[in-house]
Image (cartoon, rainbow, N blue to C red; front, side):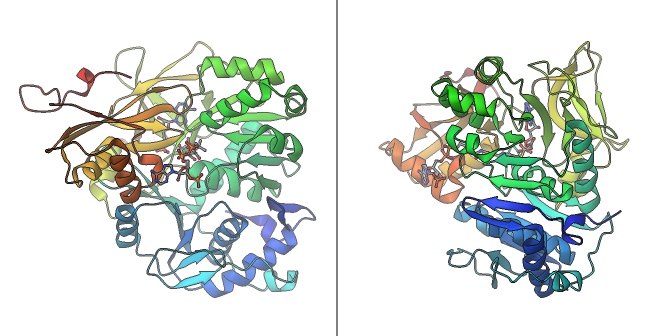
Length: 468
Ligand code: MLC
Ligand code: AMP
């Protein structure tokens, strides 16, 4: 494999990263990351406190240059998740932006982005370890129950997936990618940071995907989750000038959850652009994508990427989606049981999604096999983890958590609670969950009830809970 980030070894004369008013050229990035990589050399696994800042991107680039595995940490993890991730991944230290409080009892290394440009220093830095099988990242992702699992992604998987996406989207060094995604998940980190760096192009992280900032960014390529596009189009309908500017973008890409047909159409009306959807998972990276050169079919997530095999199993027209290819993860850290449960005997990965093929060869997703997985704002959230957090509150006797359809978030988390004694306040329970777990896992509403619907075996039947 050639280097994972070749532009750091032979820096082009171009801006690599811009976060707000702070930017680094490739030469500056190569220097800053090269210097930090020198400090990291010899380590095995480090955490990055992944605030949406240039420091996070530099820290990850440095770890990759040094051949060290990175564990990106959502800075808003609650105390239960923090304890779990540290015990599970055992990072040797945490990289963080200077001056940021880091709630981890780990040795800390500040990411210095204010480094003299000295290409020699970068070039004479550590030799990148580019064995494709070496682990690049451990990314935590929720299951239906229990704490999140760390998906181990190899350097080869990241490289293969980014190259297939470049082909699908005609993505080159000339592209300026804009997004406002968090930097601790595959979407914002692998596609959104390593994507432009592997191409030698530019990333502009906008903080928030709002019409004014996006229109001013000069982006040729935009990534976002459906909630971000939904909020963006609300603004564009009220701001035709921004909509016209954004209409000159080469490609708008949506993923991590389904973009509704209504929002597809609203965006097309406001900007003249047809959004390309792509489908992926933390464990598989991107599986299918609507191509730059094809007219997208709303309601589908495009065709399999080149080199990736997708099959629909079962005898019906729609069935479980399975995937095979060079971008599959190596397994869940310390969880051989969960790893083998997700793999079929013949080496395919069972996504848990249900899909069907359309006449044009695109994949349409029609649901998930596990009802206890919720997608809210593009985040995957396990109902069981929230139920366990609620049960830790003294005022909760029983809890059942579901996702209900929501125009903005896709699904909204609603908790049904049987109180023990006097019912606690709704706000108190929401804050309780937001402290133990990341705030995006908090219920948006709590409904108190005398009893949960149960079947003869005593199992809660969530389909019998009131909707809405
Ligand atoms: C609210 N907040 C609280 C709180 N209530 N904090 C503590 N206690 C409480 N009770 C705070 C939050 O921390 C946050 O702070 C702010 O209020 C709003 O939080 P939110 O409700 O989570 O934000 P929201 O506006 O709803 O965010 C929408 C969003 C976000 C779309 C921006 O959901 C998002 O970034 N989604 C992207 C998810 C993603 O990247 N998924 C990819 C997974 S990979 P503050 O400080 O932030 O304002 C994958 C594979 C693939 O799926 O295919 O891509
Ligand atoms: P995560 O575990 O956070 O990586 O989320 C992966 C899941 O997100 C997939 O299994 C799908 O259910 C969902 N997903 C990703 N992209 C799309 C999309 N374009 N449309 C619908 N669902 C999607």
